[in-house]
Amino acid sequence: MFAATGKGQTTETIGLFTKAAYLEMAEWRMWASIFCGFIGTILYYMGFHRMYGLLKLHVTEPKGQIWVRLFRAAYIMGTVAWAWVHAMFMTDALIFKFVFEAYGEVQTAADIANRVFYANAPGMLTAYIVCDLGLTIIMIAMVWKKKTYLPPWMWIFNPLTFKLLINMIGRLGSSAFMNGLACSNMSLGAIIIFAAWWISLNKREQRLR
Image (cartoon, rainbow, N blue to C red; front, side, top):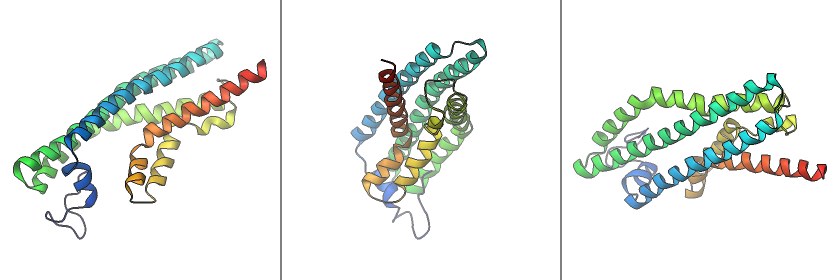
């Protein structure tokens, strides 16, 4: 996670990303990130809870109820996982920053932060599978099987697709904007999904009037 020493680097000449994102970043910006993660978790829950309400109105047959229950379980667990993963990453970043400030050794700070990260990795991977992959599979299946108001082709609007797409686009450049774009893959992806659902459902409502 923290590449303190990479190819062509030493502990005295560490990478620009590591310096800018952890060691030289003002603490208030890191606290602001924590607050944004808190707000983002609330919005994540509110958005998927609203989608769950729409599904309950549309899916009425008994055989379809299992999909509605699976969707609800996935987004509730996803909310918990989202909060936990964000908290873990920010705590790890703060450990890296504070250990370096206290001892002045990048490698020592990286070693300690990485130990914390890898200790949490199994739980984080489980959370990711539930949060992204589980919810993605359920959303794709529900839309493809016409269990929603959405046309089947809109299965493409799922968490994993846009996480990968936005992350790949962000990797095309090294500017602050492109780095921010890559880091926002989950949040921006969720916004795109909610916007697509909202536009599609509004058009359907207008046709029914």
